[in-house]
Image (cartoon, rainbow, N blue to C red):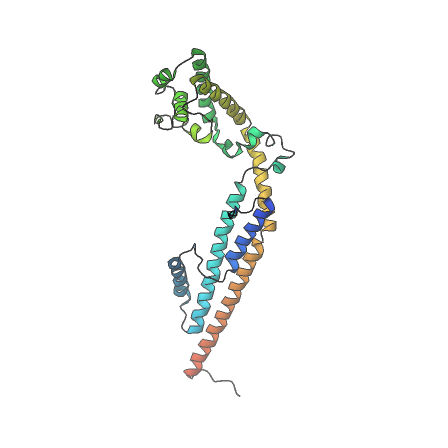
Length: 280
């Protein structure tokens, strides 16, 4: 009987639960060094605490190690929190997040919002020239061979050939438009005719011009969405409680270490006869 493998949570609620579990397991795990961590790194970390505190007996050594473990877990929590937050903030735009917005509700914006920041003024200026070239070449009914002959002097042709033919190498001088094939998927293949290629590219470039013209407003709306995600994460993920638990644990261990050191110092002075012991 075939067994379907779990693909993980699919709903936003399920993903939040997994994120919270990751944070909790990172803080409250019994193992000091988890499988994805380095024992050697922990030992270096622990040695720094030994160098700073210089414990003189087994009790002090254990307290110093415990403090090193707490700080190690705090560092782990920070890494996990950063990873979870990065994934959350860069997650695809959800339909409910675009409700009430002026731009994000549009499909062409929602699908491209993660690369709108690439549409700089410099890029758009070069894109304008490339668009005019593409329109002219469409009118001329150029063949692939003619396009290839012109590609070394006209960036858009060089770029389109790179999109159409996987083995085609971009001319190194076209640094700006070389972003184009990595950012926008036109769905071109070797079976796409020259005219189809130009028609698709012209449509896509016009769309990108529109996106560029509204870039700042789109990015402002998207930033508001990301801020709401961040606020929801901070309220629901329980990171504040986890950090507080670690902070209290460290403070308690540090206070205990200081009491132990005071006791040890007093014992040494008693042994040396420098102070009198309290009467029985």
